[in-house]
Image (cartoon, rainbow, N blue to C red; front, top):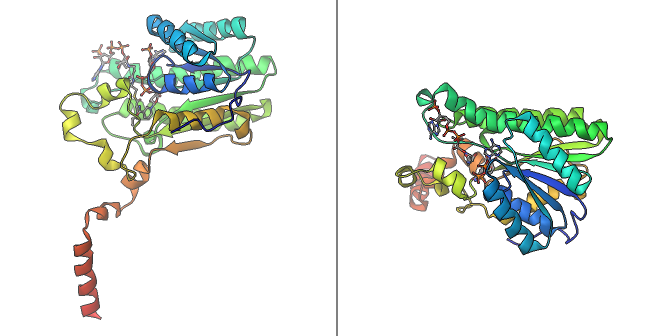
Length: 287
Ligand code: HXC
Ligand code: NAP
């Protein structure tokens, strides 16, 4: 649960974190600062960004630039790039972390509700990727894109269908550009977290009585949620030069949750030892 990388692993690097004012984005940003990076946090709520920029900077001694940006709007994304370069000179990494999500039976969604999630997650990510990819290519600079998806990007999931569609698109974007833009020294990777408690996710995914009906812990073989520092360690590694040969990868960090759900017979975990004894006796009787 402690920091994993050498103290100066991101020294001198400038990293933009979308949605960096809350939850996992804030935790990853804090660790980037501890490792010597300059940090830019971008999202819609400037009051939160300003407060968090001060908090993180006081905690770590690092420099944090808050920039208001709705990532669905290309001109606002371009403005983040411009402001970052004005303040820090260049950009070394972009962590596409901002997202929107909520649970709902799909047939209850309005078309606007579907749009809103896909626009934040997929359009927001490709806006940042396109704008900053062009920027890096024009300036002949190397860089790293790190995209936060989730495990249902490849399995799909009911009740979060707009998010599943959008995260699948982000995963396709990650792998496609890992191949196409490697020639420009631009790496693209993704992280697929399982449940990591944050206020933003919990209030939208386990609201009210739902939290009593389903316990996400039951699905996780390691029987615990992820710690923010565990995710931050992985993100910092993938942002750093230590992962210079990792490109096009999606790393799952979910305590074994999705493979547990996928394996046909994993539910036999519910069979107690005495029942296995009986089954064994039946088998040896037959022999
Ligand atoms: C059905 C809903 C809804 C809900 C909103 N809508 N919430 N429909 N169920 N719970 C509909 C509205 O009725 C409206 O459609 C449309 O969506 C837009 O809603 P607004 O409230 O006007 O949108 P806005 O204020 O822009 O907020 C966007 C948001 C909000 C996505 C709805 O939740 C948000 O700001 N989220 C950002 C943070 C976030 O979601 N974090 C969680 C990420 S967790 P109509 O037709 O009525 O106008 C995550 C975890 C993944 O991704 C995996 C976990 C294991
Ligand atoms: P969170 O705290 O709600 O973070 C979402 C962030 O996105 C907020 O800071 C929000 O800031 C920003 N955002 C939303 N719409 C935006 C827009 N249009 N433009 C710019 N920024 C916008 O949730 P979280 O749990 O930390 O999630 C972070 C990432 O991890 C997401 O990609 C999520 O899908 C992923 N993830 C989380 C979990 C988990 O268990 N927590 C699991 C798997 C994957 P503003 O409101 O200020 O715009």
